[in-house]
Image (cartoon, rainbow, N blue to C red; front, side, top):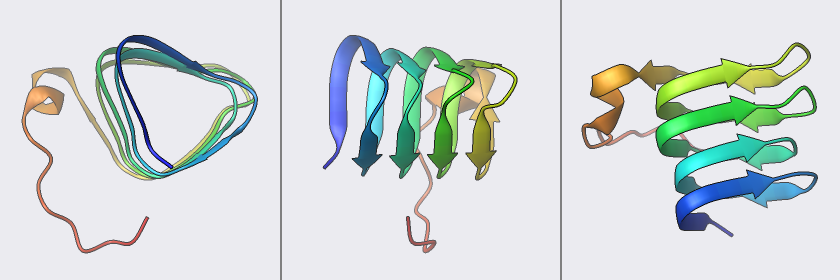
Length: 87
């Protein structure tokens, strides 16, 4: 299922199949879905993200895997456009 939280979200280890929405987040597990983080997103070395990322700031540790598109900065605060791509 999806994860939505105000504040800081820490996902490690584990698998999320769905969307992640948070103020800030650290991911060290697997996410199969879109990730929207309003402030700071950290992909730990053990992270695997299969989906699009929208965040103001992105930090990617050596070894993290990310397959998708990324929108950063002020553009990330705008609503996500509709997509026909499956997650």
